Image (cartoon, rainbow, N blue to C red):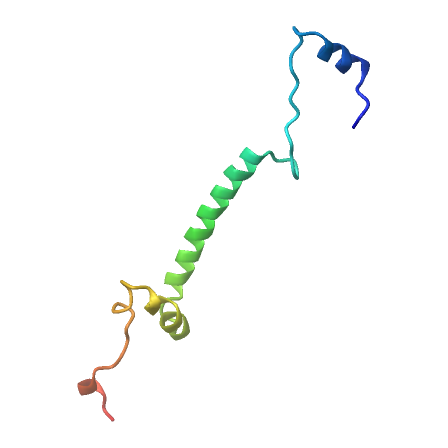
Amino acid sequence: MFASTARRAAAQASIHAPKYYIPRTAAGMTLGTAVQYGSVAAGFGVALGAGALFLFGEVPRVRNDILRKVPFLDNYYDRRIAPEDNPF
């Protein structure tokens, strides 16, 4: 692999020397750090997505295509006009 330096070779030769561990990284992050950042980003994404859905809940396309397909919200977002209130 790589040629070890004299200092590292001397340290690895002794049983009393500290054992070095070089973590694997990708883009400067270890796996644990990436999981932490990913969970925080997922939480923000869910919160922003839910907020956007309910903010645009009165737009007819969003209301009919997305929100009325949720089982407990289908009656809440139903905006049909009752036949007795229809003037035509």
